[in-house]
Length: 328
Image (cartoon, rainbow, N blue to C red; front, side, top):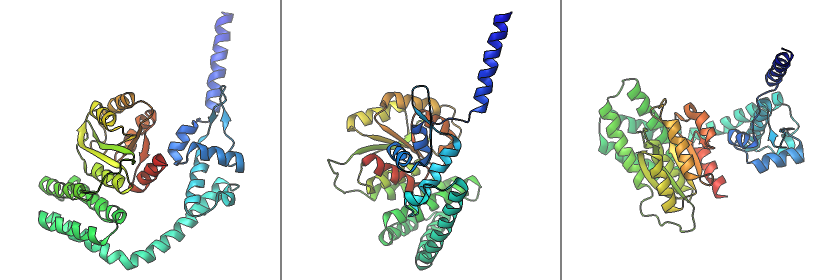
């Protein structure tokens, strides 16, 4: 009876300790959530004392939610042009105010720049949408090519192609356009994206990346955009298309000696089989090959993506950052 009481007392004390301790995050998890390299996090800690992580019994760092938020705010502040020495000593509320102040200032500058080019950009998007509505694939192709001649590739993707795809997708979901409109437009956009880098010589010294959508994911425009983004960043791209099982991605990686796989997760957003497919892909690739995941449904699979150490790219800007980080 006494032994039972002792056991119950130990269990209760452990439960109380677990409830009093905040959630702990490894430095790898913090790196994925903030976009900061582990080495940079350590450097900021040692030189500027930005946070003081706890330590596990095996002397590994762990971080609280509050510390993760501070590191994320520090990253946002430095991306706006602040030096880490200027902002390292600020509290979280002060950093929030500073980040918001910088955001407003940057938006004002961007608004001034958009006044100059906004009419051109809006014209491209509206012309493309009108062509989609009219089921005029020839006109859609013409307006895409016209925009490509006038805009840099990052602006072409971020200010025309991505908004166009989003508007078409929402129109289809809301019943404002028919399936025929969506399919016709997608075929034109896919062919347009595939032809953007045709004929460009491959760099034998450049890293290789395999891009597509996993088994069960049939919408591939996001993967096409990712392929063009990677090509513009100097990667040798092997584009596999939509709906490939993990074994095919792994075989392609092995044949091309690729250092990364990029997956677009769009539809469906609740595939019960996808988590197992992602785990299988990680097992087949091993730990050396990076997995990058993006697309409008990426956050619905966040738990599994973190489990397989995937890097999250919710937009083309973050995808470019990850590609540059991997290459560096």
